[in-house]
Length: 165
Image (cartoon, rainbow, N blue to C red; front, top):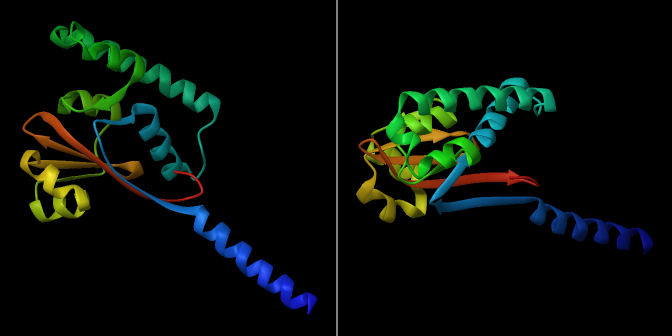
């Protein structure tokens, strides 16, 4: 009798924890990943571990220098509203150019102009994304960035995670 209660309790506990442990992020966003978010994802994929404090500090110094150089070469951007985002927050936002995004996030994992592939990436958001999506760039963490010409027009994120997004 006691053993059957323990087994039943174990099954219920397993179901509860299993249901809570796995989740899916499916969103449309106007603010996307930061340079650090994408760098950390790429670091984990390449090295099989999270970056150390020293690794992160090295990246921060490198991206600081790259942003300073970019702003020096692009004075029209340096004097714009978006310059503070590039310098301080380093987060992708709708309206950024391909050059600004490449500066922050690097090259995409995948680039497509195929409408069927973009529809698959956008999932339930395709009807909203479609009018302004001529090209899509895919980044780690489930981020897909959609462009119309040189401007970022839409972002979606689809990510299945276990315990931690």
